[in-house]
Length: 125
Image (cartoon, one colour):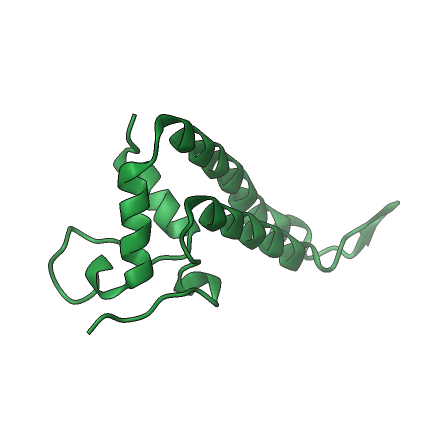
């Protein structure tokens, strides 16, 4: 079963690539990024078993991403009773999320996109 639009969007986003847009028109689309084209190719030709693994990644990534905003709930309190807040919680959660994002890229055989900082994205001219 192929990915639906929402899943494809999440894969692109978690792999660090910009929004795909309405299609292959205009300047800013997959045709101008070799790595983005590779990701699109992989998404089109995964086996059912590979899609199942990618969906498990998407589920885990959604949980990790949702935990980051929740970490801001206790930012105004350093200690309360026996509880001491981890001052690096937000940074630690962000790093954990990015690590899992890179694992998804590795599984798909696609370099991380520009949002992950050191992606293998290059322009085709």
